[in-house]
Amino acid sequence: MSASGTSSSLEAPGASRGEDDAVVVLDGLVKRFGETEVLTGIDLEVRRGEVVCVIGPSGSGKSTLLRCVNLLEEPSGGRVVVRGTDVTDPDCDIDAVRRHVGMVFQSFNLFPHLTVLENCTVAQRKVAKIGKAEADERARANLERVGLGERGDAYPAELSGGQQQRVAIARALSMEPDLMLFDEPTSALDPELVGDVLEVMRDLADEGMTMLVVTHEMEFARQVADRVVFMDGGVVVEEGPPSQVIGAPREARTRDFLDRVLNPTHER
Amino acid sequence: MTSAGSARPAAPRAGLRELLRSPRRRARVIRGVQYAVLVAALVAIALVADWGEIRRAFLDPEVAAAQFPDVLTVALVNTVVYTLLGFTFGLALGLVLALMRLSSVAPYRWLATIYIEFFRGLPALLVFIAIGNGIPLAFGVFLNRYVVVTLALGLVGAAYIGETIRAGIQAVPRGQVEAARSLGMSAGRATLTIVIPQAFRIILPPLTNELIMLTKDSSLAYLLGATIAERELAQFGRAALNDYRSLTPVLVAGLCYLIITVPLGFVVRRLESRTARSR
Image (tube, rainbow over all chains, first blue to last red; front, top):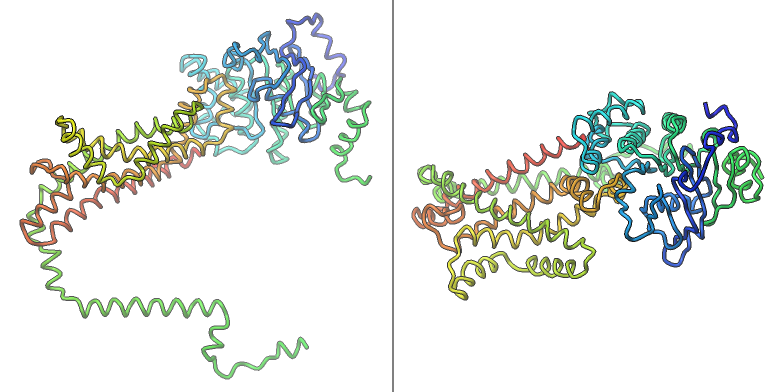
């Protein structure tokens, strides 16, 4: 299990890594909201099968970075290349790219008027044009995978937050993506429900899914991530294996942030 | 000090001022007064009213019986048909207006806004006059009665329905569109599959109000004149009023409107509780 191994040994499987191996490439990504520059020239690469966790204080731009990958936010400058397609190119078919990029939101965003099963089939049917029988089967398999095989006929409002977030993961997986984006997936959950969701994400990572995860769960990042990126003020301050960034941070800003997160009540 | 306060001597008599000092007691007294006024008013009406005269004017059983079955088979049916024609057209045009109001193309937004401000500000009666009398006179064309009713009710209804639908669409959280788009849906597909079904649940109650308003506005068709078979409820009541010199037919016609509107409210409440599971 990846949790027991050290991060450096995990990097071994991806032996040959050329440009084709990169699922996401951010090249000088800039994002401005009006006058404020939220991201100031981010360079980042996520390779196939890699789990990258982005951590940092609120307002550091990490969610914006994630949303620039599937163009929920329009980048103001730089290049974003996803699966070999430059999504910042105005001619690119962003819908086609998004079909292969799953996204999980902080507030779940399940479709409340559809059942759990329909949530997992609607995009398959309407976007990928898959037949009902096959779509249902795929959806059931993914609900099974997140431990909710029995709840297909329920409506989202009838589920707990943790169950809703697991359905959201199953919904994204039903499009058979080869990259999953997670935007603080456990931040809106009651503490006792966080574990189930993290468990599902850990299984996904073990199965080799490429994942870009914005999170405040330091323990998850430490155990599951191949690489941790610490952001502050719109720049990447520090980047490396979790043993380094979380275990032995080099930058003062990283140390200060981790100190606040890991020992919230301690006296300075 | 405290012992002196708590050992206050019991009030010898609960005077009115003492009674009104506590807010809860004051509320009880006020409620009692309200009941007393109500009972007094009912008694006064019962004593003063001339029940025989009222019955003759409003509740003449023979006159009432004479209205059936035509008031149902002709008048009620016509009212429902006119209303549904106007509502269907109004709903279709209203949806177009709502999408125009939300368009990223500015001139569409302007056009929709102008339309809505225009037709929302006009009395429905004037629109009926313009379409039913004005167009045939000005252009020398004959418009089918159903076309006139559909246009007049629909054009006015669409202005209100359009605003209702726009508000409903805007009430669907942004995250819903983001989730749909992130699954690869196009903007149009996301609107159709995710936003509009949710918006319609939100606007079901105000939309019912529009339908009820159109039911009542369908009475304006009386302007167009009508053969006996074309009469809707209001016109039916009016014609019978002339025939019988009694208000009874008007009351019967009025009750028939309630036969439409009251069950409508009931059905919508049922629908709402049925969909409660999925919000």
